[in-house]
Structures are given as C-alpha cells and as structure tokens.
Image (cartoon, rainbow, N blue to C red):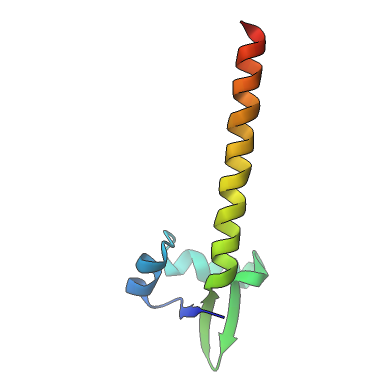
Length: 77
C-alpha cells in the first residue's frame, strides 16, 4: 500500500491530488471517502492505491457519459 501524508504538499502534487490539505482534513472529519484516509501514529495519510482507483472510476464514468451524450446527439440528427 502506498501512502503519503496529507501535510506533504509536494507529495500531493506528485500524486496528482489537486485538493488543499484543509479540504482533505475536512473530508476526513466529516467521514467523506473513508477509504481514502488512514491514521499512522498521529499523522493523517492518504491511501494512494484508493486514490488511483477512485480517479480511474471517475474517468470511466465520464467516458460512459460522453458516449451516451454522443449517442443522443446522433439520434437527434
């Protein structure tokens, strides 16, 4: 499992995480995406394996939506 600390801005950038640490802390405190976060010692970390999976799912959903919109557009013509 690959993890990085929420406070490590450079690591977040390298991992492609566009969110500020404040946003990530808020998500964790409100229980959003609990699979994304884990505590190691006293540090809040991001599970990069889950992050990659989450991004892939978002890309897949977007591609499916684009395909449906193209089909609808073709059906109108």
